[in-house]
Length: 175
Image (cartoon, rainbow, N blue to C red; front, side, top):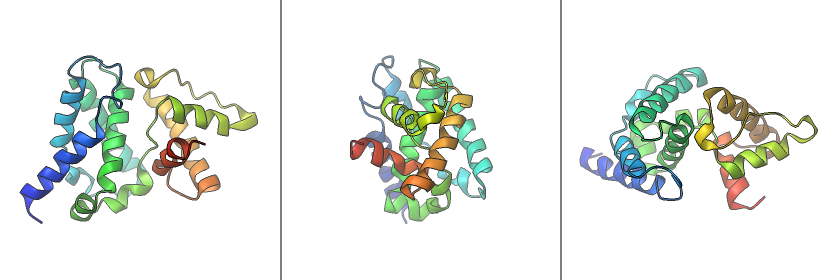
């Protein structure tokens, strides 16, 4: 596939992924900075990924790189942006095929925001798991791990899907 075509597809996905509602309340310039980061994202960094731990190590590195660029320096905002972008990319037939992104679908995280965090808390039932959630801007790597581990369990047991698709159930169906 032509590199110039793949580049415009990636630019489109970066623009669609990161809109005003995605980074609501963030300092001026956050959207443009994030989009520019994602427009240059190198999907080849996942070429040798064979495990969730390898994937998360790379995702953590990219989260830290984006965090240093955005005005808020928020790990949670950076992770949210990357998760949304990667979700869009794996569901784009051209990017998925070119970069073999199917192999990372099972490793992708649930994009966290207030409605998804609330739904995870509800689903924890009687256990009332303390995920340490305050809001996306205050999300830490440790809280994210707790929430992602639980999301993975719920995705398999209750919805028979990968955790990245829980957003479709939680948000889009209005559960």
